[in-house]
Length: 343
Image (tube, rainbow, N blue to C red; front, side, top):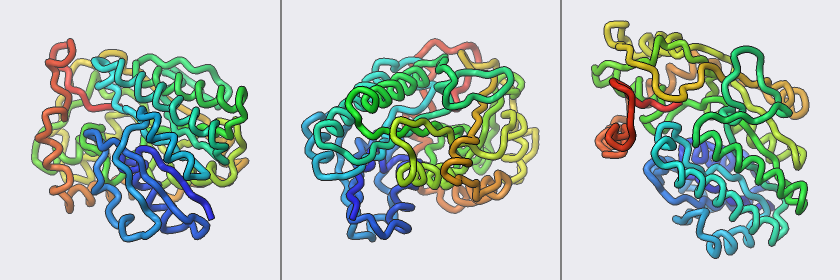
């Protein structure tokens, strides 16, 4: 029976993964969540997972080496979600991103090496590849991040893979496109637009809304991560894509539709700094080698997500009053009229 340590398991993606594992994995004896409960991590995200006697929650930081060492020693597997993850925040807090995302990852890897962990899944992002004007990045393409967040994740990826090549730590790396779904913090573009539209407030598009992203439902990402956990080859990277590439303007049109709003609710503002025009990944590898298939289409996924925010204002309304959300523009030198809204 497997003992799994999930870092960042009270965050958006991590909490979905924890609930999935507890519901579907009969061979799991225990799941321990380690989470620092920063602004984006909420114990409420785990919800019904606490009904399971298999779940243990530990409030702590991946930079706490003695704590990490003690926890890793009690587990067979590590699934590492914990990270600083918001692009705009990285503009004025680069040191925090490097500390958590790089040094924190190394702290976990050191403990994994010391205690002979059987599998270590490091969860990363498509942003490490940087912008692509055409084509799609494969797992063998060079990393060309353009912002501090993406650079810190690229560095963490390389550190993780180096522990496989140097010490034999059985590391797999996943890189997903933009996730969306219930429980996501409302600083990200989809929940931000949904919650603003539900309140009858306008939404803002950077530039002319022509930035292209691929959108992946969080449950599809978690199913792919579970595949990598179970069947991935150590030392390998797996891109995890969705099925829908679209401009932010196209995304906005879809969100207006599901929220019953119109284009009068949209204003355009100057583009934010270092806003990569297009991300694109090839995810043939995980489809062919591990049998990954999408279960959600974007239309249904957005409708389901909007309905969750409509029914759960108690979960997101307090976050909108948090002084850290949205990012106070006084914290960094923005362009005139710039409004942060994540990826």
